[in-house]
Amino acid sequence: MPLPLGHTAIGWALSETGRREEDTSSLPGRLLLVALLANLPDLDVLLGLLLYGNGNALHRGPTHSLVFALVAGWAAAHLWRLGPRVPRVSFRMGFLLVFSHLAADLLFTSAPVSLFWPLAVHFSEGYSGWGTVVHAVVFRSLQDAGIAAACLGYLVLLRQVRRMVDGLRAPAVVRRDDR
Ligand SMILES: [Zn+2]
Image (cartoon, rainbow, N blue to C red; front, side):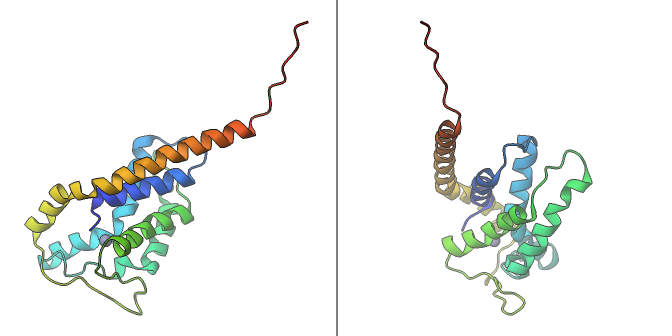
């Protein structure tokens, strides 16, 4: 399953794709916000552990739904009001970052998510205690290296394409004849 590293890498690729040139917010601030939003749905693991001692108890429920992505996207678009250091994010990008988590869960795992909650809900089955969750986040993140590498390749390609487009857009230099 994609873990924090994989979700963050996908979110970062998404956010760089949608980033505007005039966005001058700091790199650490943007990275932190992307990591937070791209992993937000898995807050249900922490809640399950705190309330039931089982990370699977609430996992892939309401926080893995379109409704949650819309609400979280709206909240993210207003986060900048908390202080000047908080990077601005549009509602659309906030929604997409949270939605990217759901899409990755759907794409890279066989277990369902509750995309259409409250109409349908699919909680994870089984038990996973604190030890299992911490072990997975620390060690199985290595498995997400493939996702991170793919995102990195995409970002390099994106930069090249943007440079090419900028080159084409730049006004042609009129050469003077020094005669
Ligand atoms: Zn998830």
